[in-house]
Amino acid sequence: MLIEPHPANPNILPASVKLRLLPYVGFGSTLSPKPLDKIGTTTSKDINQHRGHRGFFFEPCVLRALCSEKVFSSNMTTKQPAVFLDRDGTINEQMGYINHISRFVLLPGVGRAIRKLNEHNIPVVVVTNQSGLARGYFPASLLDEVHKKMDQQLAAEGAHIDGLYICPHHPEAKEKKYRKACNCRKPKIGLLKQAAADLNLDLTKSFMVGDRWSDLKCGAAAGATSILVLTGYGRGDQQYIGPQQEIQPAKVAINLNAAVDWILEQLKS
Image 1 (cartoon, rainbow, N blue to C red):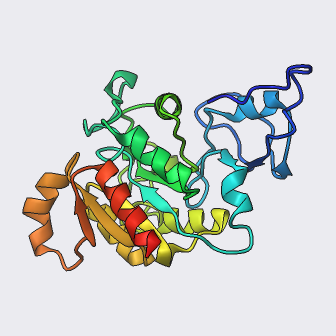
Image 2 (cartoon, rainbow, N blue to C red; image 1 turned 45 degrees about the horizontal axis):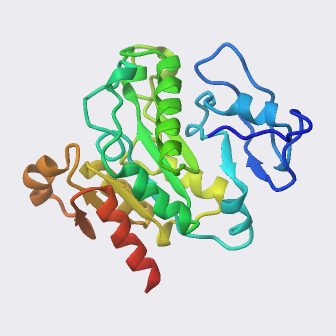
């Protein structure tokens, strides 16, 4: 959802709009929007220039450039729980590598599920391994395009995510800049730790939702409550991987919507 400018001056935001903009540089684009590193209003042109971009991968990786002030105003002094979501198989249909924009298909009910979390002011953070970038299966620009499509489809259902953290690394990456044994590739917890530091989150009160056992291990290692969804690889992992694992999910949910309903019940107690 683009931010609408002030009706009298397109370079000024309406007074009611306050956003927390996190500094970054453009990712997947030759254009680098100017860094924004303060809480408060700025021009609608600046904000919309940032929307749809992602940063280059520093350590562990980078995040969505734009986060709502509602999330930050509610937890600048007190850490709060968040819901971390895997992407492929949890938010969108699991198709292996999303190497073409047409392969990104939002799963039914995902927009409604995320909107419920938004309505309860619970930060929603996507954490995703994208080694296809490291393997040379698709360019960085496609990753930008996919996430722009995700944003648009969620916005059409009145939903948004509050953070996006990506690991592009792989020890056998085709591209040298992505070839490393990093601390951010799930089940390692670098993405969650970085999000917690950036957004002032309490990982021990947070939830990790995914369709792979690597997501569950990541959540458990970070001290979060792990939930397995049976979309994507979920059913196969539950049947063939799970029985041999020491770590088990706190909840098995048919899909993200069911997982969110369970999370909201836990947060009430």
